[in-house]
Image 1 (cartoon, helix red, strand yellow):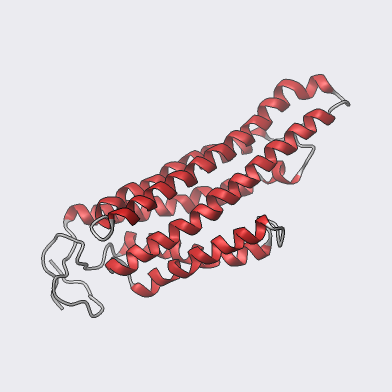
Image 2 (spheres, helix red, strand yellow; image 1 turned 135 degrees about the horizontal axis):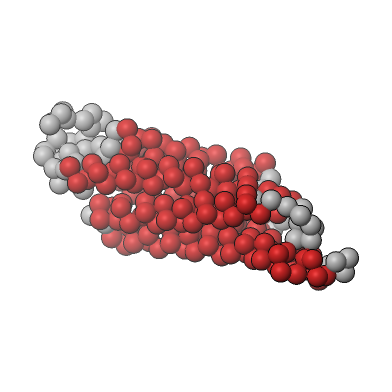
Length: 249
């Protein structure tokens, strides 16, 4: 078995077993799926999020339904990352590893509430829009309410929860050395930055979909993309928490 570059790691460091290599690949692909689903879903929701009268008019329901389906896959992938990583990360800290699973689960729950709100707009439009005609003020208010619910779940799930996720995952990946520590450090920085930016959103400094909020999210994007690519391409680096053959320098 070929030894990995340990980056200065000392004795008591082990290479991954075949099962741990599979876990790394699964974790990387699950993380990649969160990108392939969450970003397109947000773009597909754009007509509902930007048009306050969408619930009264004619629109493309199919793209909203597709966005909701992508978010279902996103929810599965988010929990998948945490479940696959838990048995390995708990060897470093079971409490933090369990906290990561809990935070990922909460994030997925918030995404689920948001997609239910979006699908509810389609249901109300299909059932009531034709009957209310020009007197659609109450229906418009209902539509705005559901969009607001989505916006706040977006703030809580892909906002606050992701900040916690990346802080915990970045710390665990840094301390275990399962990925290059310089990449893990990006998560340690990006998680708190994202959390702070969402506090600023709550206090009205900028909007959750604004460019300002996007700038704060860049380190999180870099960390999660690095996590996915590294684990898919290289797998875990030699680490004390792995159980394969002893690594050699």
